[in-house]
Image (cartoon, rainbow, N blue to C red; front, side, top):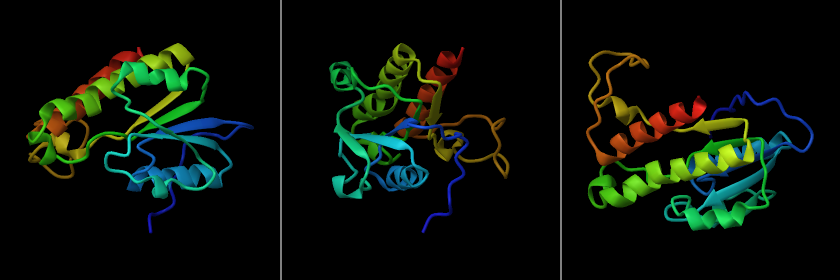
Length: 170
């Protein structure tokens, strides 16, 4: 059982949140929590690792590849207030098998999603990164000032996605 999540989004009537990767373990729990707070939730997942049966009742579901620009036609008539971006290949080890898929899964999907959010004027974008971006820690506890020392394509892609997000913040 996961601890209760503290969401720093103040709910308003009809507030709509998109959860990418919502068919996975963490995404499905975030979706459940949002639904319990009366948010309208749309889950977007390509089901490469997540399972449709993990998506909580009450959430809308769109199966799509976030790294494919043409897929965004599915989102043409959707607006939302926030995006929880959890989608992406989730294994450092697996990233060595297909580095291009890992790049597409993290960097390209994040870029395309940020472009969509900019076009739709989405006010909040929350991204799930990874401790792996710090590699073998030089000190503990690790803080955000720790040097980035990726050891896998996965962690390099997470760093790249974070950098795109920072650029879009401005």
